[in-house]
Amino acid sequence: MKIALTQLSTKDLATLAQRILSNAQSGKYPVIDNHPLVGALAFSYTEYDKVYTKQVYSGKGEDVATADHERDTAYANLKSFLNGYRKLPSAANYQVAEDLYGVFKTFGLNLDRLSYSSQSAQMKKLIEELETAENKQKITLLSLDAAFAEMKAKQDAFEIIFAEQAGANADLRQMTSASAIRKDLEKTLKTYMNLLTAMKSVPGWELLYSDTNELVKAAKNSSLTREGGDNIAKG
Image 1: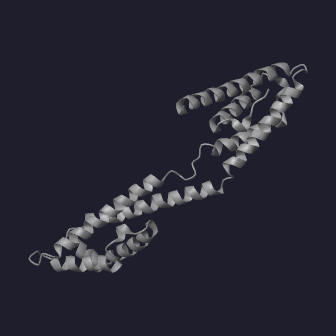
Image 2: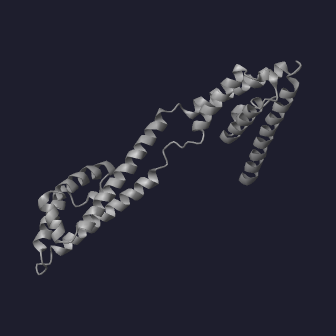
Image 3: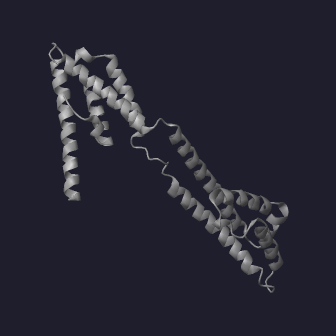
């Protein structure tokens, strides 16, 4: 029962471990029932299964970028409206537009070009100022309640997804490294296979050894087939 576990792909190692574990826990082999090595293998496989498909990052980057784009658009639309309206002295309440545009100026007219964190900090201050009683009345005079509500909602939505990304990335960083977990699984699998090899001539162990050996052969053949396909593609 020989196989270079270190040369198996991430997926093939997971598949082999899962098949060997399922076979050991099938109840067909009394000699291995409740064996502590099976428990150790189950633990190692469970830990490996948690992380072997994980990406380095949370995968939420695209969602964060989309949420940021949406808040940028809502911010830019409101700012552009005020900028245009204040330039029309003949329009009713144009001075109100000038006043509100001045609030945007106070916190920066290029918030949508700042980093995520810097923009969030300034957007919070901008929204707080626009929510004062005086400015809310001005927003209503220009019928901009819906536009302001949308900008605020997009800012809140961004904060939620950004916090989720930060939390997910922190969780990933706290996990034991995938390479360390893989080595532990390889070691446990090797110990288990060595046990079966040593006991293969003892009554009750023959079938377990034979069936497990077939699983190992299948994993080895799968790995060789994949390597052959890779070589053809590269050639």
